[in-house]
Image 1 (cartoon, chains in turn purple, orange):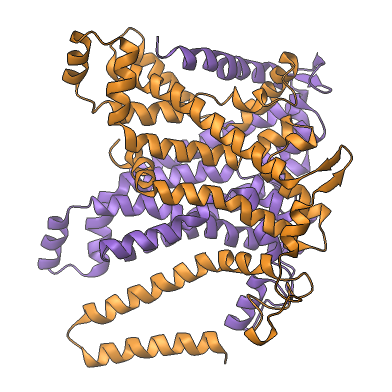
Image 2: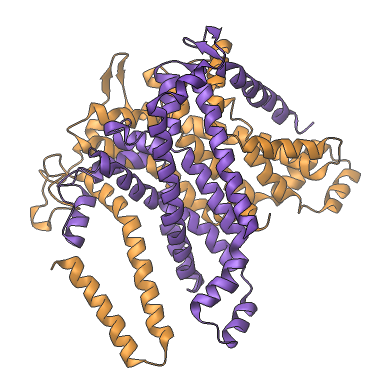
Length: 279
Length: 309
């Protein structure tokens, strides 16, 4: 039976851990060996912990901004590329996509040096462009951590999301655009009423996937900031889970945070899909 | 006023001139603006890479002095050299003895190659079964798979950690290889590709006396080669860039992988950025080589689910 490996591995490493994570969430553990039933107290602890709210706040700000800033930019780049020659398109697609090959940890390491005050590439570039930013401490000033994180994530993901938009734009029916143009539609009308409806399924897919991905952010800020940053400004939900479960060794609470994360992601993506259907 | 401002003004000037010279042909100035914008985007994306390549060859005394390379007049062994690589490969003394950088490279390569081959075998079989056999429960298995993809991976880390501990797999590569050996995403990718393998071809092979496994291996697999390329790259990247797994499960220093070790190096080489940057550059090269070899298949595989499905 060809499915046997999948079925065995799923039973072992999906179904069992799935049930076990429910069980764990109601137990207090001290390392992987021991467990005591504690009812809801793991959840009570997490929901009473200010760090959890910091993590939820940071992750939500990150998710919203990356969807609102990054995706329109990806779409814009895809539209710029869509009208070019196919050879040019392939070269630029390759270039813009390339950061995605570099793992989050490596990107974090790279940018931790690029953001060095006075000497870093980013600080110098910003200084010569707008005359500000040379001395800014992007990674140790709590107010600047999130903007820095967004810059890095934009660098990493803008080309990746662009690939999806570009693929969708290539499938857009050219004759419809021609017809609209003949009827005297201007560029914005053309985009809003002809192009956008045709790429809508892909756009929804990208928005939902990128929100889900954003809520699971962890490695990038962890490497970039060498931890969770000043005042936990770079603490994310998964970062909070990681530190609770594996640095403190409290697997039960870790499982509880995992469930809260699943709940948040499920709620947010359901809302997004509902909104998309209404429109 | 500096070089960047002058360049931008110059480009804006050309745009204005094009507009003025060809007032009725907006597409000429439009094409110019498009290439300028794309050029700027490409520049911004590539500059960190260029910076990284320059940084690793600079001596630690001048690393931060110049944005990229020092002016040619100052090129010498004192400014540009291989000291960073020498320091990187000379090994480091850890509490568990001396460990060399190439050991981590081998670990990472071994894990990525093994997990890619195992995954390729298991997921393509799964995809073949789901696309080419009618059996009871097929629909429910597929629905279950879609459902299982909705849960964040981190939810499973704590219970899997507990299981790995109970199995006695802690600090072994089994902990990294076995739980992820058959990705649901991969099964879907292969199912998608194998649906288009003609049923008549399979029937023909069956009449000729080929075994079921032989049909899968010699008829179906060669026909989905582009998807195989895409899947291998995605799996390789996933394993190569995996941080949480080795960080949580592996304790022996000489068994660690590149992401974990380079993250440690930030703390070890606090005054020698060049050393861990050199390591980072080396860690980026294998995926890049693989990507350039497979890029056509990769883009096709990445978008097939989103656009057609």
